[in-house]
Image (tube, rainbow over all chains, first blue to last red; front, side):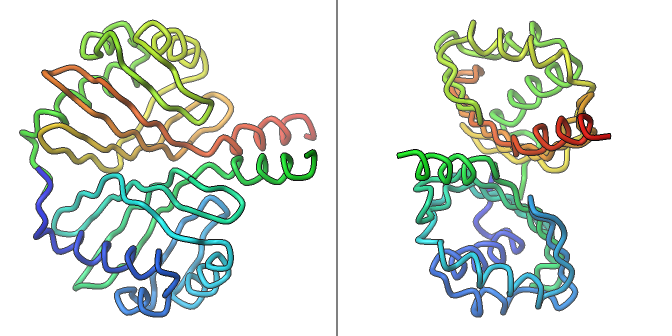
Length: 125
Length: 125
């Protein structure tokens, strides 16, 4: 049973809620300086690299809709649709490790192909 | 807090464990006839379509390693690495809806690009 009082889930949702509002500076309040973030494009080492990447992504991000969220003492797992300018719904998962209220590791997952396909479609129509 | 006694998680893990052993016929024991499965390649409507797709995928599947698993009364969410012949580790998420001990809906997520990249690499080396 998912417990709303999962401390790791509370932290992950604080991150997610700020991120989806394109306020990644606020999201960084719950991120550890030495966070390691594995994305479909590769590894981002440290808070500055994560913030730079997400600040860039915010230029095409329009929002996100949560599908499922679970957590325990030290981990949380979210499934959501990411809404972007080129692709309205990008199914996405994010896994968080949390220590002492700070996110120390993220694994992000989505299908990169949907962006390439959207680009191809716009070029051909 | 994740609870091992989540009925939906037990069903999802029964499916996953049979699937990763390439025994999808056994996995089908916990799948409803009218299951709807959304995959990165599109929607599969019904148990026969799901089974045909996974029986084909089993030809390149070598196993899977669970990273995280959560569930509540009616839903479960898994994160795992899928091991395949062309790509050793494919980060994957699967979300399950469960009714009366049977899986009625699946959302599967992985990055299709990793397979295209592996094919491109093998063609160029």
